[in-house]
Length: 428
Length: 211
Image 1 (spheres, rainbow over the protein chains, first blue to last red):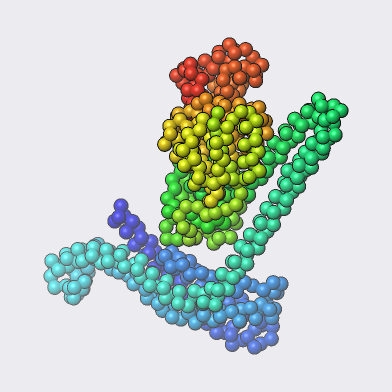
Image 2 (spheres, rainbow over the protein chains, first blue to last red):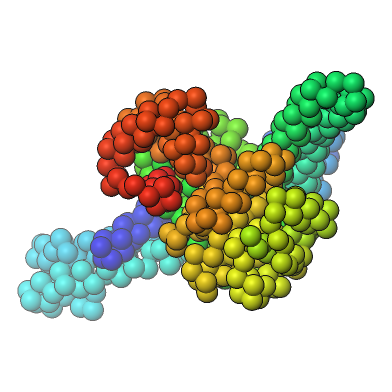
């Protein structure tokens, strides 16, 4: 198993080497057209149109390099400024957007060194295993026999038949070396590309601000909608019932002397109305912050939730302490939503929930043995989870091949408070 | 009958005291926080304790925890737990020692005074009083119950709430004999061992539903 994955990684990296060599070659024509575009940029009209167009090509190339680096395990984020609104192709706005983005110039600066490093490392990643295969195939032997002067590995030139035969074990070593070195070579290439192609500190901050702005807007929207719902539920529900309750009791008060039997009937009615009002309030409270979550934390609340589902749910919790209330609440509702999705869509017979905390990350997985095929892009449920978690820099990933199983993984960076519970107000 | 009461809201605590005393219970102590509850229960060993789940200082579930702790100390100590909301999870924990003398009701039920007092008496006698909402949540998730007829499910629900044959018969407007026939059918269909003792039987039903 170990060896197989080692060979697989090696082969994949060798293919990546071929790819890197091919990509590196495209850098030179790109550099040439970029220089032409730069030289022509003062020319009216043509200059304004040409540079952005060429930059698009360079960015496509740089993005391919970022993808290649991603495959080598080095993530490089895309550093470009978002395009300005209503910028016409060939317009000044667009030109300025390209020209003022430091990433444009960093891309250009990378083209030559990137090509040299990518070409040589890619070539090396391909050449070493190929040289190994040459040895294994005993090609040196035939060459030695036919041209009389040939060398392989440590024997330069090959002096006799047995030295020629030894090219086979040497080839095996070279192949093994090549397989082992290829991923490492690609990683070095990716690290080099990262020097130029990754966002600068300023760009990183800008990206972070853009992301925060978006998640904050989402959170504010969701919160406003939630408050509106609560307001309406209270207004149409408990509040209205309390008004009618007051009226009924008032009426009973009026009638108690003249018609005690009718007053009694009204009081029974009033009691029932108070029960309904309480029921509605209870349901509302459950939707805002479930009491069992306040009382028992994530562990107890998820277990209580599990009890209410129609299928057996295994719950495993490993939490040394409680997260802060907002995080805990987000984690609970995200889990509840994920479980509701399982009940609604999966047709699963069993569900497993695991809640763990390690390295400052709260990780929750919900896995079921249902039909799979869940797509976060389609269902609003999964998107809702994503939005809930994004407010805390949390993430959700869904693995759901057709035929199942579906695994939803939710991760929330957070710190845990002191063990056990924090005070809150109200009574059970 | 001697009662220990634990409720942090003064309004409700006084109301409950008045209500219980009007029905000839003697409230020997009324505590308003969690830490005072366990010592009070062990000191007085009341005939029944009426306990709110959520109490100061942490406002989590210390009432429930104290109740469970008291029952390990004094096995079978009758305790009626009240709460603003009910969770089958808590019901399961209360029932886990299988000793009977346990109640778990929504605070809403107090407004039906006769039924509430009946529940307190039942728990004091070693019986069970389970809130209809807990029972309906338990019934909702048990698929094997499909083998029961609608009437049998109704009887099962009443039984799970802790009612005796006579009370079930009165509620459903049938004879006691009809009720015991339904109960026999239920026990046969669900494969539970029959039992003559009312309290034991209720516990068996709840254990089955919780399982």
